[in-house]
Length: 192
Image (cartoon, rainbow, N blue to C red):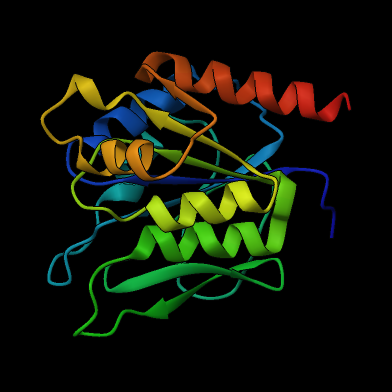
């Protein structure tokens, strides 16, 4: 399997979903990256995230239900009641325990850091809770790159604000600038 592409974990909940879809509209058509989305899904409601993301990107969008090969230029989405993780360079799911706090984002980010090291990227959009802080630290410790959406632009800023306060992300930028920062980083890294 080819490993010369980046794997980008996207983290959002609540109002962060709309910011994340805006990100896709600013992204080039053929990025050298796979995108894996983890959000805080409700247990009792079917996820509409795949349908939402499909409206904003021409990339294939997969709702992961079992081990799936990761390919650049594809988007992979968590399903309700699961965690999405990377194992042996495959994206897969684990059932979320009923008693567990929803830390789907930290779990995803940690697995991306472990499997893709310096080609791991985390992007934290708006949302509630502290999920993403520990995973962002793991990505940076592995030599990867973290971008956080500016937390001062919404009332649902706890996830982004916590990441800024408890980690040292590489960039804190406005929504419309996230895609450009990502693509600039990937282009610069590839020239090394």
